[in-house]
Image (tube, rainbow, N blue to C red; front, side, top):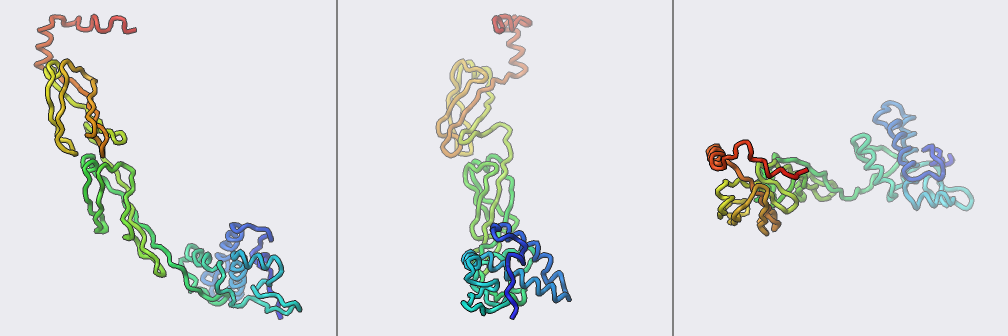
Length: 295
């Protein structure tokens, strides 16, 4: 009878090789000797069976430990006390943990599953595998991001976008991706959101920031202002004698309970500028006291 070959020598790895080294060595050899790339070369096919069986043994922790202790031979058979164990690589590797790894490996290397292999190992039932996720990226405007909306994807699915969604946030629709295998669940749909900027509104976390133009008259005498924000109409008072850059805080009027920060910006019309010049009589001396002692 032929003696079972040493699996370490078949994979050309040392006896103390780590799992990653064994897998890497097997990948390289599998690419070289696989029957699909060596048609009409029976010796290559036989070599492929040997290295596959060797990898199956060494990728199973218990089988490898028993082999290292001398309790089983290279074919996975228990050694007889008289040295007459079964020889060669038969089809007795069903149930060994390495087959699941090999199925995944062959899928990535050759676009096939273990069912395409002939001999060397018995095919076993594969565990359920979740399907692949589907990914999308969509753009929405700033106001709709604050209010929330429903948007139809190219796949026909309806995505519900929550209030206050931010750029870069990924939303998920469960179990609407590619179908699973062997009874596994479907993958998910993952959608990355990109929010377009707004000309006047900005956000900082839950804070909503607004530069608000006001007239000189409103700044001098004060006034009440009503604004139609995405969260609803808000009313507030501009204090008498306000100035450009002055900030007002409206609690709870920002994003999802955050605050609205309003920065006042006094805006003058051409007529107002003309009237101010005539009224002040300062003309070119407008800056004489405001910059004194600045530096």
